[in-house]
Amino acid sequence: MDLRRRPAAAAAGTDGPPRPRPASAADEELVLRPPNLRVVAAAMVVFLAPFSYLAFVHYPLDADLRRSILICGAMSLAGFLVVLRLIPVAARYLLRRGMFGRDINKRGLPLGEIRVPESLGIVVGIVYLVIAILFQHYNFTADSMWLVEYNAALASVCFMLLLGFIDDVLDVPWRVKLLLPTIASLPLLMAYAGGTSIIIPKPLVSYVGVAVLELGSLYKLFMLLLAVFCTNSINIHAGLNGLEVGQTVVISSAVLIHNVMRIGSSMDLESQQAHAFSIYLVLPFLTTSIALLGFNWYPSSVFVGDTYTYFAGMALAVVGILGHFSETLLLFFLPEVLNFLCSVPQLFGLVHCPRHRLPRFDPQTGLLTGTKDGNLVNIFLRLFGKCSEKSLCIRLLIFQALSCMFCFWLRYMLAGWYK
Ligand code: UD1
Ligand code: MG
Image (cartoon, rainbow, N blue to C red; front, top):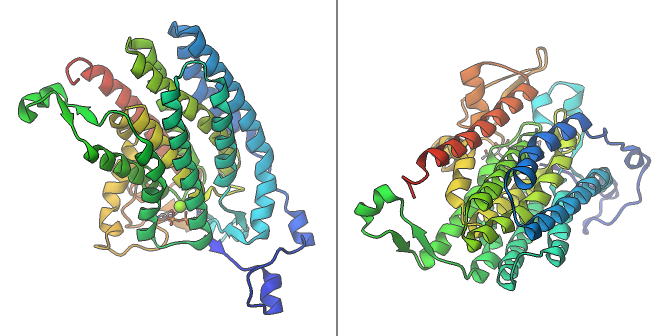
């Protein structure tokens, strides 16, 4: 991120910490492009309709559960409107404090010179947390045991939001970035009192020797690794307008569908509660993220920052852990897993890793060309040829959606045989 000191402080030659500056005429003039409402409306329909159909038409869910989902949905909708309203305000403040970035994939064009406000994930994170905290009052289906873990999950998400914001402000080296989710997942790891055993897939039972393997504290290590993976893998599958938010919107929608399918097809009360718990955490995450997508879609008028990528990764990791569907979650993360595997040589210093592993932009044609960097953004360009930033983002999001569909298909095919 291009974090600059305020010009006023630099001119005055002060060594002290930056002090608030009265808004200059230029600050007052910052008028953000309005959100792309067509993208927002399309995303709301595409990503919420399947879940709503399954929850309210297809499966005969319990009336209390439906009431809780409806209230959660109404609060999520309110959160969506608040985020739409607050982003332009927060963008003005962030820009005033020098928190902005340049759009690298538009270098050489006037659009590439614009200071794009950074870290707008902070708005989504705060609104999301307020909704998730207030919602506890209206949850008619959970017992108090769930509330302990629910609040521990929120504490981890909140901690991650803070550390993500710190990363945006301080631009910490990437090895330290790995540590941030480790710290943020502590509240969840300490409060977790659920099962620590895993069910061994049927075909492997004869090799392992038991059907259920008790992992003990190794299970907590697994939870930690999942949180570190989810947060960082979203953060490194990034750099195109709309990609960071787009991928999490697709994954969240798949998680919601998975949750409602599991509730509808399971007789086990504990499993139903676990998936309901996930719905209450993912629904507000999805709607508030869609509002951010409206501003972050090509051409971005705001950047989401590491604040958002870390927050989103942690939000998805905690629902995967506490909803007991981490395997399925990892399958939804297939593009991120592939991107991580391709990135390993650069991440671990075997091959040179530039600060930004982004494609080369040709201002004459407006097309991106893939570089040798080992990430999906460049690999897609090398495989499928040059294209515009918007097309590349759409292609990667389609790949994300196909991966989620593949996961549903795989679960369907392996049902009964695998577990
Ligand atoms: C990660 C990636 C890096 C990628 C960056 C983009 C790794 C190891 N790191 O780094 O390769 O370039 O994310 O987010 O894979 N930006 C754009 N267009 C966008 C989004 C971001 O140009 O649509 C640029 C802006 O200059 C913005 C900056 O990326 O200020 C944000 O980068 P940051 O999130 O700090 O990078 P990392 O997460 O460290
Ligand atoms: Mg980032």
